[in-house]
Length: 289
Ligand SMILES: [Zn+2]
Image (cartoon, rainbow, N blue to C red; front, side, top):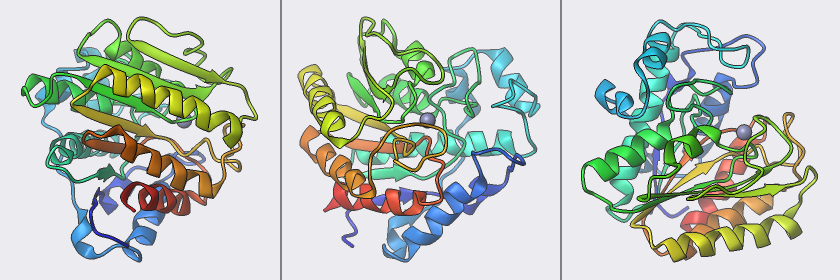
């Protein structure tokens, strides 16, 4: 495999474990182990935790305090020992991915928990801090980019990222997702948030034209940077959703990103089947081929 890639990940992402929950440590641990057999050691880097002030630039105090206390939000998003440290690390990897991708290298953050359902005020849907929102807010605040597009390819609508981006002209949020499905949002586009609701059962022949259209909208926006919220729960065997993408389709998605023509970073969001390591492999292989 070529080494024009950086993967931010750490076994510390496995330090919280909610019994019986689909969002399991093995998602990252097994994927990391597999990728290490494919790419040279120099590709991998341990992320550092996000500074708290960068979390607070996106999230309200009451949310931040409850995550710090590792408290309960909802049945999908219960607190657990280690969740605060992991959430900071996941957001830290996202910050680093955005920063380093602007030097010209594709960067993938292989971390958990995911983030795209976390709104500025509400943790939900397995998500505590919105790592994508933290990264794009920081990048714009530092003056490192004026316009950033987010392409959310998780099978669920990223309501949290949409809430954060809505009405902010420096951001474009674009999502392809199953509808109807959790969390019930994303049926229509709103202002600078473009939604592609796709029916349960969607397979490649309907998926890729939507992706192509989404990419055109992103190119038209002329972003300086694109963040990909990469969910793998669009997989045909995913236990939580009803899409029909195959393993090979993730290579095509990765390859499509090369057509954006600007720096791109990508974060792991969902994906709950044991084949996840192979789906990530295909995605990264397509992206960096
Ligand atoms: Zn999802």
